[in-house]
Length: 273
Image (cartoon, one colour):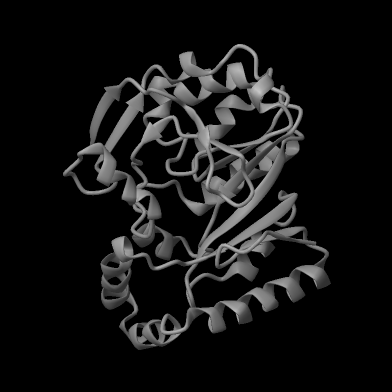
């Protein structure tokens, strides 16, 4: 793992996400090394020739870039961790995310933290200070054997659920981000079953096979589920048909089970219960 300290020019930037006004990313790169990660497009701008998952740039001055007064962001939504995990392993040493949160706790904004890491439990004392904050655990698989192949550097599903419970028990609003949903591999109903006692809501996102990850996805299928290759190719000829069906199934399931949900499919507007 190549870790480099860098000076960032800005840290709160406008968002392209459908449900967020601004984003904060304390790091560039991510040690989780998820094979499907769309954020690898960042490599076009950073000059890295390492493989995705083998480098992290630490924005060492990021906390200093948070303004003392957050008037500009009043009543705005801010997502922490849109193209990196703010609680990946190097956060243990650098504490960039923690130092950022200390300043953000004074803002009159709404915050989402997206992570796969159990390290977020370290900052419960800070998280309790926020007026409007949700911690979303990204869990795309119920089977940890599949997870190990897709997310080799990320914590286990068991550890994520343990910390989800800890946060929930500490009255911190939680979400489970079921993302990405792999056709015929992601048992999203099982994920809900495993986590429903500790989650305030669920977010759903489909697998987008971007050109930058296409080779990785099909290599993963070839090595582990070769019988699914032709099925995936058929799905992604006209993926809207397939994902509209999955979306309707999710909506029906959540309505019947009185599960709060948001759906992020095909970059549509968010659908809420």
